[in-house]
Each structure stands twice: as C-alpha cells, then as structure tokens.
Length: 346
Ligand code: PEP
Ligand code: MN
Image (cartoon, rainbow, N blue to C red; front, side, top):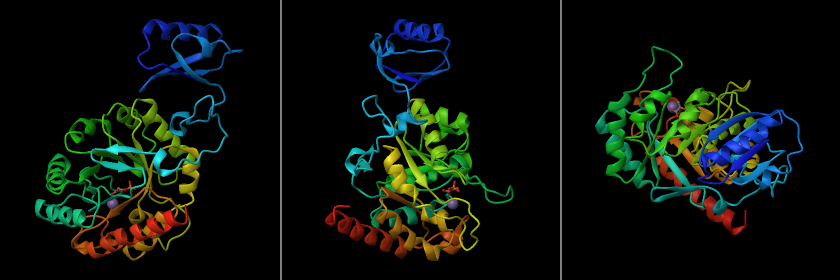
C-alpha cells in the first residue's frame, strides 16, 4: 500500500500516519519525492480511516508497482487502461517541449571528440531541425581498452557546441559521483542501458533538478524499466523520458532488436514521454532510417540518433552512425508522417 501525503505536509502529521501504520504491524518506508510517500508492507487492515487522516492526499491500496509513473490516483486505479494523448504527457525542457505533440529529436556523435568536430556536428544537427545534441563524455564501453570518453573536458566541449547552436545537451552519467559535474553542462542526464538497474544512481537522479533520459536495460522487461523510472520519480524528479534502444534477442543480423511493441504498452501504462534510439536498436546505419520511420509511426515522442559529419571516423559506434544527409531525411520523413498521422486522427 502506498500513502501519498499532501505537498508541504508538516513532520508531525507524517509521524502520526507512520504511527498508525506501524501500530497495525506494517513496515513503513518513507520516500521524500515531490511529495512525501509512505510505502507500507504487511500489517493488518482495515485501512479505511487512512484517507481521512490530516495530511494524507491519497491512499493506493491495490496500486501497480509503478503508481507515480502511471499517474495513478485512487479514482483511477489500475487496471483502468490509460491512453493519454501527446498533449497530456510530457513536459517542457527549457524552450522545448517533449511529449506534447512536437517530435523531440536529439542527435549527435556517440562520444564527444575534438572541439572542431563537435562544432561542425552541432551546427548540422541544429540546421536539420533537432532540439538536442547528444554526445557521451563518460562512456560505458564493453571493453576496458575501448575509448572511455573525454570526461569533464568532453562535457565542456559539447556544452559550448550545444549553446552555440541553441541545442539542449544530453549526456550520460555512469555513477552518482558524476552528477554534480554533469549538471553544470548538461540539460538532460542520460542513464545508459547498462545502468538501468543501478538503483543508487537512480535515487540520486531523483534529487537532480534536470530531466533524466532513462534507457531500457539490455534485457529488461517493460515492467522492470518502469520500476527503474519509478525510483527516479519517487525520489523527487518527475521529469523522466523513457528511451527504447533495443533489447538482446537471439537475432544476430542486428546488434539489438528494437522493441516497438513497447510504445503502445508504455502509452497505456505510463504518463512519461518515450523516445526511440534506432541507432543502438539496430547497430547498423543502413537500417536506422527505416526504424526511425517505424518508431514515429508507432507513436514515439522523439528520436535519439547517432550522427557524425564523417561517420566512418567516429571514435565509437561508427557502424551505426548515420551522416548528416540521412539525419535531414529522417527529420523530413518524420514530419510528413506526423502530419499524415494527425490527418487520420492517430
Ligand atoms: C549511447 O547512447 O551511446 C549508449 C552507450 O547507449 P546504450 O546505453 O543504449 O548502450
Ligand atoms: Mn553509442
């Protein structure tokens, strides 16, 4: 059972609710998010009086595992299907909107390279109509011998390029110690697939005052992914963007299998905006454009794309990195698709 308290509730009232729960044998865990939430396990009901206690906003007795991410309230308990439209989901990031009917395109190299290359890429990304620049400075590489990224110096390089062209900067943090450094440069903090289960990192991101782009784990179910998002939201940060980036399957023709089934499922189970990364989803640049189209058609709120002015020279993930003309074609096609979808009311 989850008890959500009113905003700004006094400590004395919280203590009374905790006492009421523990007196009935429940074990109570307190989460200090946007509002204080009490998660109660065990104990013996009835609990009918709880909702009427001073300071209590709502009581979710049969909630799903991810009530905050689902936007659940007692009057809309699960399994009532939710299918919110673009306009009801999402939030603003600076001047940009995500999940509110505008396609949120973020593009850039897998890793930050030198300042000149970064500048050329940012210029082209902005001209193509993207909202954000992606560029990794702390890189989670499978091999310890692979390029590990430029660290803070890389963040500064990417930040300058993004600002020069009015782009939001998206970059990954791999552990909690990198957050204070990253927030000085980055507009959206990325959690990579390998870190989706890193709950201490997720909790710490809950305290960050920047949106979080949460990639799906390599073999994570949608439920596990939403639970990871719930960690961030329950710790105080409601601005989470989910990113489908492909999952591990038996297929070897592509690096991962882009799970577009996730889009309608997430639409039903969550109020969070969703972007799709067809670069990691396919691992091959020849397939990225087709899967970007498919993602938009299936209802993605945005795309995360690896692009480079000279893709073959990219320091990491060159095989899945597209060139600038391909990025321009993807953005053009996405807009045509969005218009067509709006016309048929999809
Ligand atoms: C990336 O975006 O460059 C990246 C490392 O992605 P993922 O965590 O999805 O593998
Ligand atoms: Mn990459």
